[in-house]
Image (cartoon, rainbow, N blue to C red; front, side, top):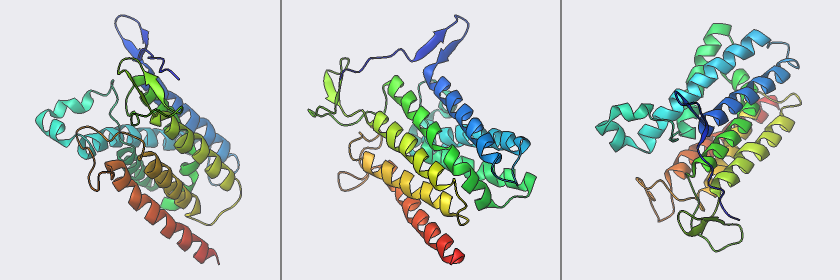
Length: 257
């Protein structure tokens, strides 16, 4: 396979440039909106006004949390030397874990407005997220960032600009964290489940998929490996998700019993 070397600018109007990366985020929010309305029709305590507000709050949490998280977790020295670099998002530079924390905070504010409980909202939100993650990884692929390690495997993709073949780890993440995780959560949540269990499955499987793919993904050059010549920041941030997810799943099923 040969990397197609896609122009990151989808449309150049002269006075403004529209990037594929931004379009992928737009697709992510649109998918979440459509899925949220579909789920709301099946649940008596959700309506269109609430889903629209939830998407708005969530979008703010994703964008602000994702960017701030990236600068704090992955690019802190550059942020401290040039704080305005936080606004240079056209070339990428978003952290899932930062976006995740941003969404959690946004949902706390949303719950205050509509007097909902935290996990009731998060169980509703969790199945809406994976497709957006998949679109985001496709944006990474188009930008030619977050590549996997050099390989001679037929699973690799030849990058003419670099003169080497690499694992297309962005596509692996789009498949596992996007499509597969979406199917797991959508099917699981299609029937009544114990409170917290849908959120728990999201934490477990996202953390697991991300932890595994990090073994073939090149760590951020400014960080490298944190320990043991294999532990990455992505793995370090995913471990608490897996552990807490297992705890929540056990607790939710024990309460039901």
